[in-house]
Length: 279
Ligand SMILES: N[C@@H](CCC(=O)N[C@@H](CS)C(=O)NCC(=O)O)C(=O)O
Image (cartoon, rainbow, N blue to C red):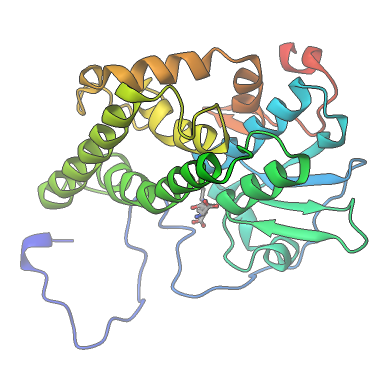
């Protein structure tokens, strides 16, 4: 692919993979490509996911709920390996027609409830258990503002910066410059907010969980190996907030569920107790 000589044709057609880390699973159409039912475990909440930033949002919240003694938040965590295309199974597409992790089924209601989009799952669980979401209208609105901010902003960080900095088949300066600029602008937005506020929405909430999973992990050097490139030490308020959240026991556990790291797969099919996480 010679980038500088590219002239877009009249109509784009999908005639070959475009290279890059996810080229084997990206395609220009939706829907399932193979038949497979999803497994069901013994708990009411069945989570189908992987430990990516969008995935860990949900496991962190579930672990936070369990940490404060909400036993109804027990869940079975099933690994959906996106690199292997498992998000295109008929069973997964039935819950999420968008074929992206995370997805959740709640069997505790009369009719099972399918939930997809990580922000929607966070909101669903927070409202179901009345936890990690502020009660007052003003604080709840602030929490929602930041939750939606994360959902709208992170595609520039992940699909833009992360893709071109870490996953594209070659390094192209134009998109790297563009998305680095935007990522640093976003970090500055939250750094300024955190200079005056301890959390996103007065108290620790689903907005913090959502933002930490992307921007917290980014400044802690856990995403795209980009901490130095982005000079994250400049964002001191984000760093302090990120470290504090990282120290929470539930966050430590939530991060590990369905994590694929190198050749190690910490796929925890069923959450029993803290001992499971020490194996
Ligand atoms: N807006 C969605 C994005 C979910 C998403 O992009 N998930 C990625 C992993 S972090 C995925 O499943 N990728 C697989 C694919 O694109 O085929 C959410 O927040 O749930």
